[in-house]
Length: 194
Image (tube, rainbow, N blue to C red):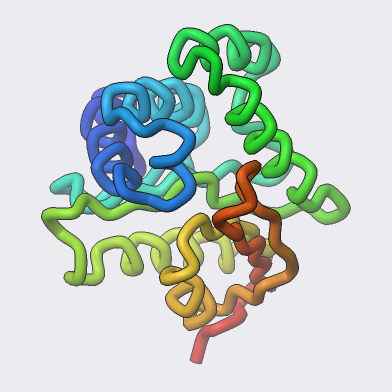
């Protein structure tokens, strides 16, 4: 496990694209792989300005953390989201913008915390513990700072895995078509540690 650099942009983007290709939320938003890849590249490229993009050395898993006081996208990048979505998904852009707005409205803003924006394991490495090991590594670093953490789980099958590491479900929101529920989860410093 290590901190990713600009040289890892392609690897991290590929890992996250493969990981989310069949995700019930993100495959709805970006049903074509190349479009999903463009969206994740946009986000990962921005997040690399923080030393909190973590990657398993072989690219088996990747995570993107936003530190307390940080933002996922710069102000300039925020202004590029709507035009980018129109380019990527055309007439579906309003639905995807509504989804992003639901993420934003659900995000807690009353206490500084680390935000797990993305965590994914490449399908070729699923079931080997790479993603959870990467998450545990990030949480160890965060615990050393005595900071809480927050995430949204776009796939309910993953909720128990997050709970084992100390996250508790604190809310939810639904995909704009109401077909999928996203869990919002919070973790106090040191929670889930023996």
